[in-house]
Length: 613
Ligand code: M6R
Image (cartoon, rainbow, N blue to C red; front, side, top):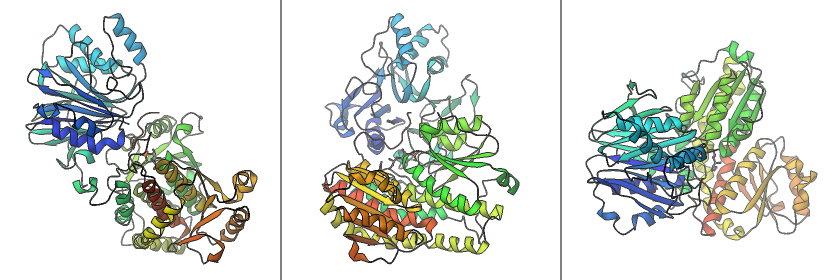
């Protein structure tokens, strides 16, 4: 969480940093701050609240410096306040630091520094960092060109936890030093300007050439150059990576909110995800993977591990892999998986799904799986993200930047990709009738058009949202693949509308939850599997009998009079029905949130990328 930006170049840094912060605000928005090098002093301006409060501060327009760092915060240690907001400075005000991550041993470091005469003004873990840098700087009697870097390096080697850090100093008015460990940070480069950011979209309008840092690699930046060092301060060479996303992908493009834009981007996103995965011979293609028939045949189990929406996409992967490849699959929440001593060995394949590729729990689960001897495969949307650098293999959803906290196009693109992966495995294993696979592939290619068709329900959903936005509890029901969608729809609703909701396997209702059904309560059901439709209808009957209002999302021919509202979606293969059935429910969550006057893109207490445990 938290967003950090930095600039070193020939222009005034402040407007560039504020623009970058606004684009990163989805990562945290309880306070913001900026520090620039102004002649031979460090400016420091901080404020509680949103980036716009920072931009409105008296005197901010007077900042002339061409080097600066800035931060938008999602509080972990210390409540949102001006003192706790970043940048933080050491006692002598020689160093300014912004930090994203958590310093787990900050109490010990704080004690060590206090014993050495340092004092603290905030409750944050971060404030130890500039003081540690100052401590090592003053202890270092050498006066060579690496002195600043050595101080930052020594300080960082004392830190336990996760960090992406940018440091500037009034003693080095032409330099900036950055480093990361388990938290994201990218360096955008142009001829005489360098841009730093927690993610690529925030600085895409300036450059498409990026350096990606690995854990504990240090970069020393000047206007014209970036020098890289490892943790022993040996010089290392790095190549830039060219990122194909265009800058407008990170703008709202006339939509009121990123979420709505991203919902509407789904046909394009899915086209990109499919890309050329189905080749001219009608075979699924993953050149970047080297799984042999022998390896797949020998697998005892596949784990799919992820958090939140990405985990829900994983559930659809389980369905496809088990049905098409006959390999048992377990889907787990990353924060649970890593602490439950999962049974993993070299006969296990672990697949990790993460839009951002920076989710702390997912990365930790991946590292654990590798240690235990499994092969690891990352599915991410962000090229060069931490998870893709840790995994043995990586495949990308190519859905374009997702900015809204509520994940929409990332989910549908993950569902598409993991299902294509299942077909690819089945082709290698020859575990499924070729005709069945060919029919599924045909359905994949039809998906973008069917998504466009599904999006036509927008107005109906918008009007329906007006009638139900004051609900206090909503239930989502489904069986089989539809239950996975019920889970995702319920998460979407609660995270942006703050309405309590729960999802249930429809058949499970009468084992307890039905006690909650009372007159007027809203029950939303998803019915796309012809084998299960009759069973689910019986369960809906049971809630109707107890007074529930019903909304049904379906691609089946039903007696519509039974329900209060029915939304028809196009028919598709069951493997892919989640991609279509979730769309009306994404729109419903969106319009309820709008009706309630909430900030759709930045829901309370949440951040886009969860880089802390
Ligand atoms: O970046 P990731 O895919 O790893 O993020 C995982 C979850 O934090 C994320 O899907 C979260 O649940 C979304 N806010 C849901 O809309």
